[in-house]
Each structure stands twice: as C-alpha cells, then as structure tokens.
Length: 504
Figure 1: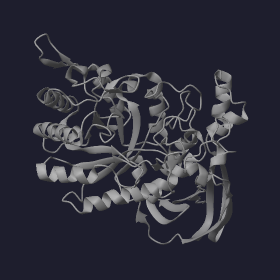
Figure 2: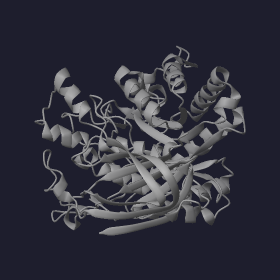
Figure 3: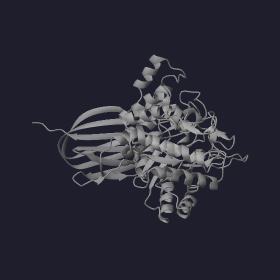
C-alpha cells in the first residue's frame, strides 16, 4: 500500500489542539503513595507531559479519609490525600477526582470489587455522604486555593452501568447519588466542575445511560458541567458453548463511539458541555497480551488524531503496570494496561504518546496514516502503519495470541509513502525517529534477548538500551522541495523533523 503526500509548506496552518495530552489515568489512589508508581509518572511528565490524571478508590478505606467517633459523628483524615495531591501538583498534574468507592462506615451492603475490596454499594446515609463530599471540596480549596480547584474536575463514581461490577444499585440509585454529590459540590462554590456518568461502553456503539443521564439532569435540574464515558473498542460475542468472549470492532470504532455521544448531546440543552473519555485502551482487560506489542503505538496515534475535535480528552487507561485490580501481574509482559511495565520498561504504547508530543502547534495536512505540522521554523512529519486484527481474532478467537507469539492476530502489511514538501530552500537538519518490532519495541527487545522473566540489573539495563525509537540526524540541501520515499514495517512509526539551518 502506498500513500502520496504533497504539501506546500508556505500555506497557513490550522491550530492543532493536542487532545492526547489532556488526560492520563492510573489504577487507584493508594497506588500513588508508592515510589515506583511515582517514578514512572515523573518520567511520563518529563517526556510527554499530561494536564490531568484520574484514578479509582479516592474514598476507599486504604486512603484513610472517612472516620466516625463513638457517637457516630464523622471526622476526616487528609494525610494520604494531601500526600498524593501534593505530589501530583508538584509534577504539573491536576486531578479528575473520581468520587468512589463507598467507605466501609457508609456502606449499605457487602458487595465489593477487586482484591482490595472497594465497596460498590450506595451510601446508607446520604447526609453523611454529602458531608464527606463537602468536606473534601472545602479541604481542597483551603489547601490549594479556589482558583486552582476551579480548574479541577469532580466525577461521580465509575461505570455504574456495570451492575455487580462497579455499582450494586439501580440506575435510579446512581442518579440519586449523582444529584446529591453534585449539589454538595456546588454548595461550596457554583463554579466547581462536576460530571458523569462515567459509564462503560457495552460494545454496541452507543454509550450506556448517556441519554438517560442527560434527561435526568434536565428534569431534576441537577448540576452537570461535563459528560464522561468509556469507549472501549470491543465487542462481546458468545462462543459455541454460550460463553461470552471479548472481540474487537473495526479500527474506527472509537471515533464512531465519540461521534454518537456528541450527537446524543446535540439533542439536549447540554450540547456544548465538555466531553471527557475518562478511560480508553485497546481493551478493558488487564491481561490482554496485545497491550504490550508494537501494535499499540500506531493504535494510539491513529485514534487520537482521528478523534481530534470530537472530545476534550481521551484518557489512556493506564500510565503504569503498577496496577492491582486483579493483583500484581505474574509475568514481565502480562498484557497490562500500562505505558510502562513494572520494571520501568517503556512499552510501544508509551512512544505512541511520545511521538504525538513532538508534533507542532500548526496542522498543515493530515490523512489516514500521516500528519504534517509546524512549530516556528520546524516541520514535523509523522507517518504510521496501522495493522488491524484478523477477522478470526476480532470475532473472539484468541488461540493465535500466546505469551511469546503475539503478532499472528494482526492483518500485517507494509506501507510506503512518497513525501514531497515544497517551499523549502536551503539547508535543513533532518532528525528522524523510527519505532517498530525491530526498532525499540520493549516487548520485542525482550523476546530477542531471551524473554527472561526476572531480569537482573545488568539484563534490565540491556533491555532499556534496546527500548525506544531509533534516531538519526542528517543534513538536506533543499532546492525548492524536500522529497523522500519511506517504507514502514507492520506497526511502524516514523517521525521526520526538518529544521532550517542558517549559516553566516
């Protein structure tokens, strides 16, 4: 397959708003007290730099916030909360505070989720819940200032449409929780931002509860400042034995899902609200072996660019494999969500965001598999070769996906490009970065170096040296145009940066 790219670099560019830098996510709040988690996030912020972060379990017992005295009167301990939020602010991140799960002293039942037993039942005392929410907001303003907290987001719960999964109540119970929580937040200051319903995509292309939530907010006059949902690009077919399995929809399913939400919002008074996709990945499974492969770099690049202008954020779930919903991963590359694995190796997914972060602030042109941008006098050309799944794998047949053999599930092909950038005259420094299975994919480097499950310091250092895009620098003398032919291997990404060299 071949793509021809011909661009006049003298043309004015359109403003490029980097949606991909708006939001990153993590597993749960208490994991943010760990040193390895923080080291990984510092590196993400240093090299990529996101604006917002979201995580589960802010009100769970392991954060030690909610307490009652012998008379049943609430009191609060903010030490762990402050420790985490101080760190996030130090590295330039603001929170989307997902208000979950129910503290044990407020639980109405025993239903929990994950090994750490986040309680998913509605609060038994809505007055005490409202008091907790108000106290949290007041504490945030007292510590960080009103101007700062007005830039935060408060999201009510996580995926309440998954009954017995993340919410052990009805839709009506969630709406009751939402309106109480939203009004408690707004009672502190009307400018604070609150939203929901943070529902998980059911694989049908229509985000669950969105229409019902918008109708409820309108009828109840419930405060709402943003809409959130989780558009995972999966399907949930049944096998021949009637068991539900995980499949994958087409390569544009994320864009279609977001467009559906936007269309649903258009028919309501909330058409202009912000839309935040507060979880997203190739799948919602923390053991999907696809997550470690080179496939993830073009997957992230293509989806973020095709969704430009449709949403305010597309939050990758999650930045690190220090993630314990189902316990710790039992192998080095166990299919975890993270951009970085537990030993600090940056997976191909990490570099998907790294490549996006190198783009300029002016968009000159974009196609199905390329974008050309400019920042000042420097041009950036980003090319990628996205290879979707085979039909069998997309339909749920996972037999071709094995720990040491993961690429048989993709319909792989090479892609070539013919690039011509006119309007260039003189000398240009050309910096290139290439990533594919042979150039910088951490999982593939691990395979090529013996696939050791417990690498020691020396072996880990070798793997880190073999991870990341391979760079090169050259000088081009352009006589009116820069022309180039490029071939990308399956799952390959190439960034070309051209900067004018002025010589006296």
